[in-house]
Length: 595
Image (cartoon, rainbow, N blue to C red):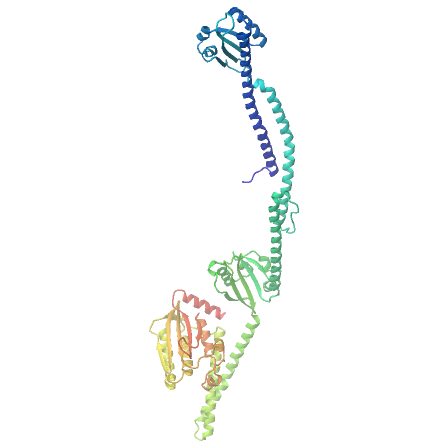
């Protein structure tokens, strides 16, 4: 928890505490030592006076008896400011634990008697044998005891006065030093705060001391590094904004919560006023539930690592956009997804015009083709035709049939592309679909000498339009028979794989070059064009089949050559196996296709 006191105040108080401790500890120690020394000196002085007096009594003076001795001792004690007395050995022995009694046994003794600082007395006793007739006894000296406080009071008072003066002098000095140091540190914090606020040009020019040199160097290096990185990021951001603003496609960037983080100018032109919804949900900026759901999936953890989500958006009539939602979840960038709007309005319009043109032309061609075919059949039934005329009529009749087939396929393809082909979906056994197609293609295979083999014993239940799925299977079988060499088998297999029913039709014909495999599903595209023409192919069967399979939420693809073979091709189509969600998925897809 942060302290409420400033750094300068805390530093000032710390200085005062250190100084006070540094002054008081020596003072206390001096008082203790001085008291001990004063007491020792006092005791030595008393003992010295007693010995001096004893020397006079034993060697220099002669007394006729005890009373003259005691009289002299009284006078001497008055001069010394003490009380001197002389006791015989018997008198000293009678006093029990007294100092004089101890002196009888030890020769000398000393003690401090009494209680309280002012009521105590220093008593010293010395055993001696005076010159003359005075009896051997104990000389005692008692004097008032002056304690260490009395003796050292003046000295300690001077010391404390010096301590107080030193402390008072240290207060302004400590304040000045703490202020200078805090000012230097404040300068460091001001520079650091400026760097944190975005002023990366700030630098620390002077360090408060050598101890701060590593900190100053680190802060300056950090500021320079941040400044370089910010310049780089700013430059990259400007370049990215320039690229995005120069794009024709609208770009919308979402954060991890699915809110608008940024947009480019093109998106502002597509959706005027969208910039007002920065920081808000996509559904608020672009009112479209499908786009909102796609963005929600992309920014969630489920969208992490998944391919882009593709959908079409028509905000108003005549304006169509291909929308690509790319997930950025889990990249650590703080972004959730990028949404790109490709304007395909002109392409959609041209495609619509093309479909309408093809449909109209095909429709208009049906009547004259029917007339040509009818008249050719009428002429062919005449009995007066020569061989050449009959051959010409056969050519007319054959080409009319071919043109009629092309026109029929064009009309069917146009209806599929426009979503106008109504399909009747229902539970279907894929084996029955393949069996129906097999029965229709068997005569063609027998006529060419090709063995048609059906290998599908596993029951696969799908939800499909039975007739349309038969049309796809028949088209793939007819193509395989058409390109398969005589005597070679065409195999039709089916299996379940990852929730899909997969059907493969394999032939051992010339195969399809890799560079042409991506184009075989285009309309009118032929591999080996001359041969295909001679065999009556319209070039529309695979394109029609692809649209039918897509309406079933499936996929049409190929592999050439097949696995384990050197030539040939296998065409696959897949449709979802029947489950509780399949019906809803297919119905939603077909509803979107009709739109």
